[in-house]
Image (cartoon, rainbow, N blue to C red):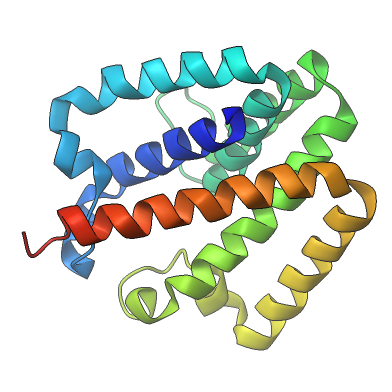
Length: 186
């Protein structure tokens, strides 16, 4: 449940950042639905997620943050650091708090989930979203990398794979149902 809730927080953060892009794509967006209330709700979800499973919640967030920052490698952020620098610092701090194994597991699994998500969004992102990894790397290369990441994660972190992929599946189902209820046409 902690992984699911942190996954939801990551989705909310992504939707908050991508509100304008999602409107152009005609996609529903959690942040657009909850408007200003999105911040307090997100913070409550973070607290519950950390309470339920601190190490994995922190690791999944750090891995997602790092991958998100890698999309804008040279962009200077309000901290004065470049995106990739902030991402690396957070990963190092998370490794210090948890372990290298915990962070590596999260990074492998979250990266494979990101590829799967980009495959699912391929038709919507082909003209609008240049950050889609499948668009940038090509379908064959992306499929090969996704399978390799999945197999590596499964080989070295089978139990974590069960948790992460189950939580991701439930989150995608939750988002699918949310889109049916709150879709852009409503």
